[in-house]
Length: 195
Image 1: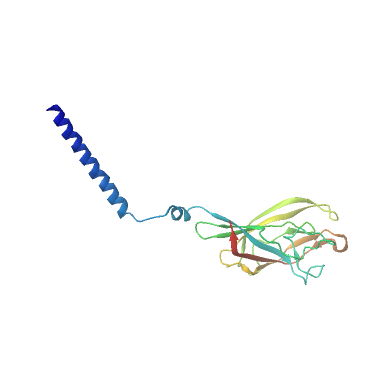
Image 2: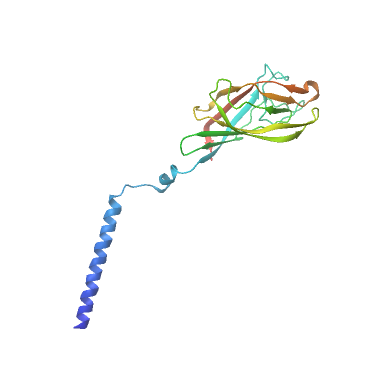
């Protein structure tokens, strides 16, 4: 008789277990389906490598061509007259804010001062990094080595986003040496972003 009761109890527990499992499956089926990558898509920032350039227009530049402070070329043999690619970082924040960080690598046209907003006020600078710079013709100076822009309002399709004035540069080569006040123009292309 004891064996019979034990068997009944075991069957009863088995039935309870089956019912509990069925309920869990039913709840899971009723819950909305969320794919794992979608669950994390809204969380955190996304970082991309993009193309962005800052240049002195040819009408101001002593080399009579656009001079890109994002290009490390040094005149007279290697003029910084062409834009570079895949050089900048775009951070898209969870709230949709787009922050573009552009390294300023040219030390022939060293950027010594940069405004915190574009000429028309449409682009705001959120951060600037500076570093010490030992020039050939101007002694020890401080130059801007990186700038972060808020470009949330722009599609950044490769066209000029903004002009920044007043800017100050130091031309560190013999023929045009000295302090300058040339406007800088920001061009960015975020249409083909790579992770």
